[in-house]
Amino acid sequence: MTKVFLQRKISPRIANGHPWIFGNEIEKMEGESQPGEIVEVFTHDKKFVGKGYVNPKSQITVRLLTRERNEEINEKFFHNRIQAAWDYRKKIGYTENCRLVFGEADFIPALIIDKFNDYFVIQTLSLGIDIWKAAIVKALQTIFRPKGIYERNDVPVRELEGLEQKKGWLTEPADTNITINENGLKFIVDVENGQKTGYFLDQQDNRRAIRNIVKGADVLGVFTYTGTFEIHAAYYGAKSVLGLDISEKAVAQATRNAELNGLGDKCTFTAVNAFDILKQWGKEGRQYDVVMLDPPAFTKSRENIQKAVAGYKEINLRGMKMIKPGGFLVTSSCTNLVSPDMFLDTIHLAAKDARRRLRQVTFKAQASDHPIIWGIENTNYLKFLIVQVL
Ligand code: SAH
Image (tube, rainbow, N blue to C red):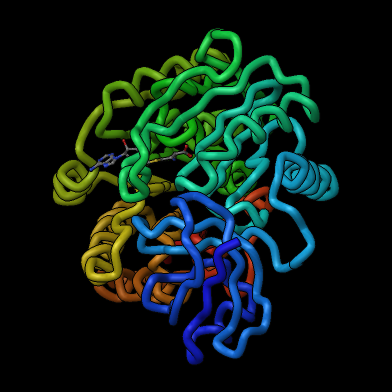
């Protein structure tokens, strides 16, 4: 097996649990290896670090799979890791719908598996994990006897790994619209054409957090996608709910979901650009009891963090100005390069500019089926804040 030796100054970070090894962290490699193959990693002074898969084409040259020298990377390895991920979800109470495997946080770098009752959606986002797709599918079949497994590998990041983008059933073709239950409501998940894996499970607990503040309220939900927060608001007793999204398709899905729950008359969804309409409505003096913001990630690269922060400041400032005194702002950020502290500071600055005072009700991260591993910063990515706007 090829041996990879790390530079002296880098190995402490990796020793502390981080599974990624960048090209410039490697001092030398001994032996020939094919892209995707398993290699052994050592410190500069030849202490064993772990085993992982290599891809010289990727910026992340090696991703570690195990720290045990005698643990073989084979079909059984993937079965055991997926079983362990499932045992963990059962332990913490996420069984019907959950992110079953959250990549690095489940010690299977670059693998994502979402469970939507009897269906599974998988993403193999690096070459080294893509090679094991058959083993992963086999493990899912053995553990769950699922009705279907769908591949959502139409993700640009795969191209950085030299992989093609593709999607489709890995099992017998079935209906790609799957109905799930969440918090007593029904939602249709379009696993073929929906965003990411088709549905954002990471907000499943946070959607319950709006329960009390939306009672009797006029609610504006921005970046609604399938209408999840908005339909929850209607269900929890909002007086009226308006959801906005730039995508016509999302608006159609949200409308269908509201009808599915008998909440069609309370919810309206409209396709607009949020940045433009918030500006306009702010000028017109529109007011709501509750404004909810759940935008897409604003950046994936460090160079654009300041731009992303400016984007958060702008929409939150505009959102706040439209809230009646004593009303609530429900605001999220899924940009992992914007840290929780940075996000709170941004909201604070927006409040100063809007001349409003805030009272924090709740500040949380993603649902616990997306575990956070200390030392792997990008596992702590979702910020969810509710503040009263005074
Ligand atoms: N709240 C949703 C997730 C929202 S994802 C949920 O809980 O499932 C972010 C959404 O923002 C996407 O549906 C995307 O279409 C929408 N979006 C992106 N840019 C936008 C813009 N400028 N104006 C309005 N919507 C936008």
